[in-house]
Length: 56
Image (cartoon, rainbow, N blue to C red):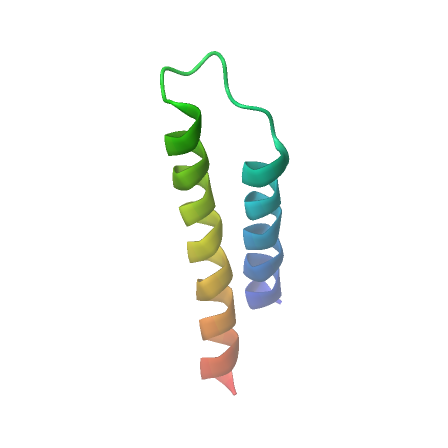
């Protein structure tokens, strides 16, 4: 169940980074912000898949 939650959370974070408008309140440039959030989503997605595969 935890692995599935990591996979879903990773996908949601990736979608958030793609769809959400650029942050205007942060001092980070839009591309850097999307890359940072996208990497977080990818890490969560890969971690969930890895744990699911390793469990089997």
